[in-house]
Structures are given as structure tokens and as C-alpha cells.
Length: 143
Image (cartoon, rainbow, N blue to C red; front, side, top):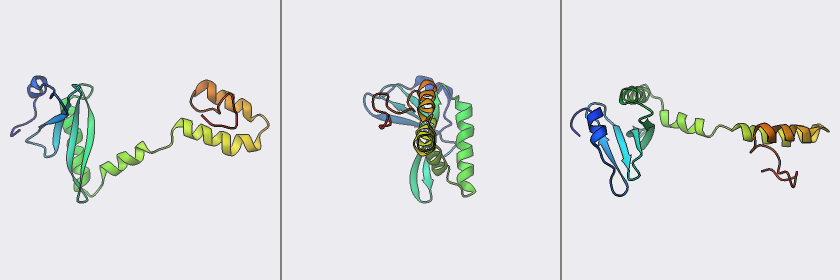
């Protein structure tokens, strides 16, 4: 697409029969709307970071407006221009431990070896964070 990505183009676009296709913005290099065969629409940025091709999903449409997605695409380009890697930052954030991971670790590494009341800690975790506690039928096995 030679011109600017517009709301009219987004509304008029129909999903492909298979796979996905992109409506690219002619103003912000790398910025596009991805439309899948299921009808899902998401704003993306494609480009090179440190010599490798990457795709960063900016956000789902219509939850994220075109104006906000365009601003985020500019932020991504700015981060790359000053030498940062926004893709690496996003990947690191995705791999942070969850509450469940921390709860299981607490029970196994602290509560169980050091407290007689470790089962109560486990019960509390299972009550408030269902996927955290030890397996109810076999307390030696984590869920």
C-alpha cells in the first residue's frame, strides 16, 4: 500500500480464505495491519533489529485504535534508532515467573522444609491461586 493506513482501509478489508495478509502503511516503515483467515486483526511492526528480521505484535484491533497503534509503532522505531531492542524486552517480560511459579517455589523451598504448618500454606495457595498448590491426592507432586 503506497499511502497511509486508514480506518476506511481497515474496515473494507476482508479476511483471506487461508493464511494471513497484511495491509502495510506507506508512512511508517514496517507498520501494518495483519488479518488472518479467522478474521483476527492485529497491528504489527516488521523490521530488522541487529540484522535479524523480527515481527512485533503491537496490539489487537479494535481493542487498540489505529491512532494508538501508529504511536506505538513510532515508539518501536525510536527505541531501535537509539540502540535498544524492544523485541528482546518483550520476550524477557513474557518469561517472568508467574504467581503460580513463585507460590510453588515458596512451598517447595521454604514452607515445606522449614514449617510444620506447610500444608496450611499449600491450602491457602490452592484456595486463592488454584493452579499453585500441591496436588491434593499426592502432596509430594506439584500440579
